[in-house]
Length: 187
Length: 71
Image (cartoon, rainbow over all chains, first blue to last red; front, side, top):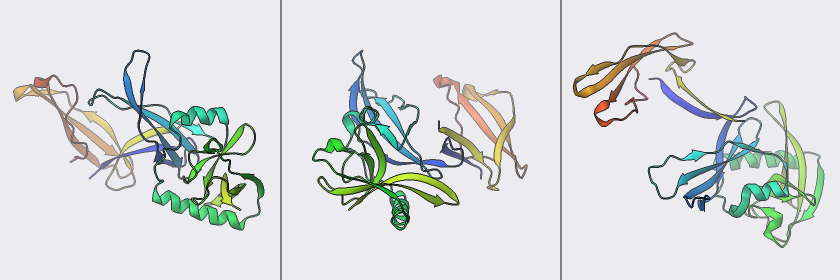
């Protein structure tokens, strides 16, 4: 029998977005004092690997209210500190574990990385979590690569504060197409 | 920006169904409005039919559609 198909098409028009992480729910209020439960979702394209974020909110006092979704925001690999703080706000560090399929994909990409020649940029993970978002034990996050710029990258799960790591910029060929990305690996 | 895509996949799994016709609403007992929709696959050209009903007794505008049900 025919079935209704729903998916989110990436703006590359070749891939589908899949949700891979979301923040925990937090409560906010507007100027009229209405309270809302909000959280952020993170989605990745299965073709171009772009990452998008969108917020969703629901009236905290009304169980029957509809969930309101904001538009998708594309997260770039070189996002300014202010943008990341604005995006993650008070909620960074609350990521849920990534979807297992994506972790497997990321591991494959990482193996490809280690075999490739690349330009490395070394730095030490700061003593403060402000240097690494959302948290050191997340698989993906933003790492400070210059005074004002952060890079969204894959992060080894065993990286912790004080470790010396390498941020490498790489390209990888997936299904014949080149993609660019950053990865953080332990030195 | 990414957009949400929704379509009805034909059971040939190669085409999408598009609605090409619907009947006027008929009022049945208990003030239930009913109409029929006709959908066609853009690949295998197969035609499907399904019914929509709105129960006006409860002043609900939401049609009662069994979304997976086509004949």
